[in-house]
Image 1 (spheres, one colour):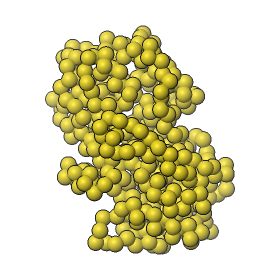
Image 2 (image 1 turned 120 degrees about the horizontal axis):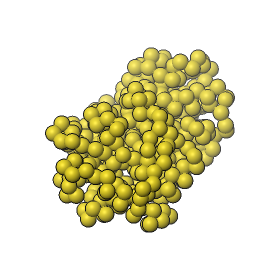
Image 3 (image 1 turned 30 degrees about the vertical axis):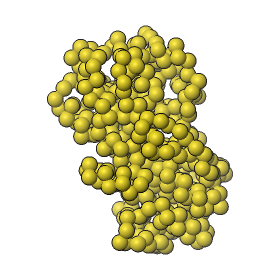
Length: 372
């Protein structure tokens, strides 16, 4: 019998769709709830557990009470033992994650599986270091660390391979995080906080985020010029987050939101730092197209840092009105790996798979494969 520890950070990722770029801190969590944000991490954990449920291994699940794991395990139809019970009178926080991780390590878990973002990975690294194997189910807004699977389903697949002894030995992978306050102000400064020993299977595990600092400015200018030339009159363009899309805004002579979604019509900024609900209102009233970029080093076009572009938004737009842009340098950094989607809607992810044109320069594009 194998022992699998499960920790779910129930508030991870809640700030994404409402444009808050994270939920670190009680004040931001309160603001997210006031804006109508709902938990997403428990459902993402269940997607991973669905894979584990079907793998046929004899696994004992050790988890936490309520939303910290029990609910996700029950939804997946797995039997489990509750090892940690947080204070029911308080919102769970980092200390609960650390205490639970310490308990699972003490119980001798073969693998600790957690759903959260970089902040959750930090807490677990602080608690157990590299004492036991740990794998992340991506459920946060900002996911720069290399300890996460590409998608929840792939986390479940990798957990099964590891518990069955059919993947590579765990490797020490970087735990990175950024300051959310500076992140909301348009400054991205990542820092190494430690390492976790993570099961390794290259096709299932995401890479750490690349800084993208060596991209040739000439490449970016040509790509931005191509995007500006394609913009049709009286059509509203949603420009997604990122330093690559920021060059498009600069080419238009506009000050955009580096880490948010902005709206442009007839070369004029008509909306800034939009939430999911803002975007859906625009789609209902306007002819709208979308411009997004590729996460450097990882390859994601949806599901990392742009959760405002939700499954509802993507379905309302349609893939034919979505334009992907990336510099040639950014595409080379992927070393032939496919582009990735992790929208939170597994069926939509499957529908988005295939081939997509990527604008890479002035009168230049390539065809890239999308996987989920």
